[in-house]
Length: 499
Image (cartoon, rainbow, N blue to C red; front, side, top):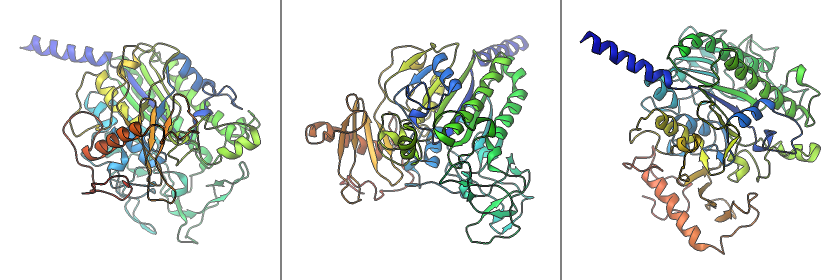
């Protein structure tokens, strides 16, 4: 019996030792054309991001699950579209019930339950429950309904985008220095039409929408602090990783989202103003993580994912005019938009042990697909009520023959929907004025210039039926139908059966 127990433990440890570490680097508002390897005419260089493409796989038709922060992060972590929840439009603030339900499987909880140490460092933006209310907090009490309740063993970061306040460096459930002061957006001398969050701060609010902030918080520290804390946590995992205990790190940077605040060492670099400099700093921070893997001899069996939560902020227009830099690449529009520039994003995966260096996958994939992909990697089957919109691309990743993805749904900030299947993309009508169906062949028209709805009504009809099925079934993937978190909602404008 004792020998069988030892053998069983040995086999389990050996199997775990083969599992790769995972580092998921998520940036904020980076456009497809902001990676220099994807944009030959880029006005700045991103050598570390380019290194991931050179040493791994580039997904040139990779998409965020939405076009703004909160819903994309929900899709990334749960493998389920955010519009299935109570959030149909927009984003959350810093405070509120976490959008991820306690019983919802996440990438973190899945990997944790399969032997991984898990950590999240950086911007959360999915809701937290703080002690008390604004103006009447008790920061000696813990924050709940936050990353530590969603599968992460460790958390260090900030609650949301900086314009939403409650700005402090949280470690675990506690703010290291409580956000008991107040401030508001200040002028940004580094980038025009932008803001800063920096001292001096006030003891009392001046206006109702003033932001809660900690004495030691300053916006320009975010990227450095996040990278340093991530590396600090990784330092604690290195020995265990070499001895069969893999780790998963979700590193969520706040750049190049506003405020655009590159460190001094990057100013004057590149040819796209402060934004280009901020992207260069972002790339440098990525390089620090890659260097840590090299130094600790963990590169070969670590999956590094790099991608963005949506397309570029509306300042992309100014960069075209001033610098001839196209943050959205050849794609139409940017953040918030249902068109490709809103959700087609940089999407790279490096895993030297398994992924062919310099390889490319030109078929559609979505950030919701990571949960099913990692489950496939570990030989696990997801339950029916998890990862409902997650389709594994594991076979494509390791160079095997893989089918094209099942139909994918895109979602704009204002509630407009589109469905993508193969080369075709159908944008649905909405309740807004002059909003009609549009059909594009992305294989010949990636810029979405020619609406083919009148030429291919059969394609539009087929795709319209498909998106309706995906909405009504509560899932994209095969399996038992699941319920959306709400009944019919008004943005499903094209659906005749509204019960």
